[in-house]
Length: 505
Image 1 (cartoon, helix red, strand yellow):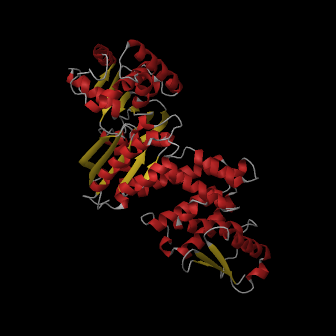
Image 2 (spheres, helix red, strand yellow; image 1 turned 90 degrees about the horizontal axis):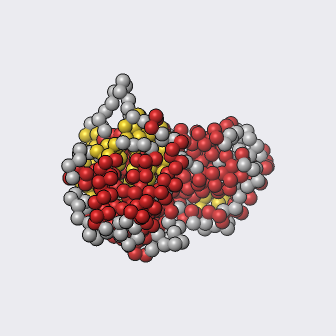
């Protein structure tokens, strides 16, 4: 991107929503504005894991204010990501429908490991550059409102990533519900945190890293308090944590806590956050942790800067990894992909060439990924393999993809064959339907697992919710089975708001 371009990242965290706006300057991003709103949405999940109306309203109000600030930004300059609370919320679609409207931009719900990867990118890009002879092995830890991420990496490459369902808001609600600080509460909170984080022992043991960095939220707040108390700035130590817990116990409750450099909005969740942090120190035998300036939102900003190149390659690699893990007929997926692309560009000529800088080109690329993955479910069972494939994609770890982006791919895989009623809500999206009709027709035309004869075969959408498939004279006589399957396809679409017509078959 050109120097001077503005980029914005929105982080819908469990405790706070954050908006970071930066300006591109020779490959670096310099902050021009930062807004934070304490939404505390993580404590708005009821027993059925639904966001309460009050919690949703707090989120919508914050996003509306962010949206006003982002007026005038192009879609390619903004990315919003949501984390653990919206990963858990059963009614997240209800929240997101309005949230995207008031913000004015899309919102991606990202997986825990994808959150971890982006956190590492944010930390790595804000640390001093290390040359090839001094590639420190980094352990990065981020304690958020409802999840804790741990990452091992070198330079800008995250190598091991995991997300654990333990955080400052969740632990404060569970173990410090009345805001009271007692020795018993801290002991119970730390034991419970260790039980969740115990799996980390086999992966993040001390021999695998040289330096520990703590990102954002709890760790930043603890670092500020310790620095104000005379400890070394930018460093969290065991001694410092013991001193802080002693201060919390002396205060007895969040309401009576008076401590320099601790913001009022942090006091209600500091008990849970410190408990988790102490558990991490004990489990991983950490003596000191450096407070990093980078966080999730910075990783999102730098990926916006590099998205067309680096992230496109990462996604392509993710798709290739999935295709290799669930072996497919490579020749078949190649011919289906090429056929689907040929049909799609007839509907959307702007997609020709597959440029990732245009929406049409990105849609064509996603169609290609769906074609590459459409048969992965057959490794489980050939019976209804499209359903197995969709399930795999909805539940796979997919670096570079948001949850909703993987779901869109899963819906294409689910819908590439069979009845269409299962896609009822998705059929309101015209862009998705264009991808779907191209993929379904490609699968039909390649049913014999050999290259289809596409000469004179056309696909057009003249107006409204109609598609016309055209064939040259005599085509149906040459390929009677394909012609039969096309007529069956016409009938399948009659049970939807869309219509498919045949001309010449």
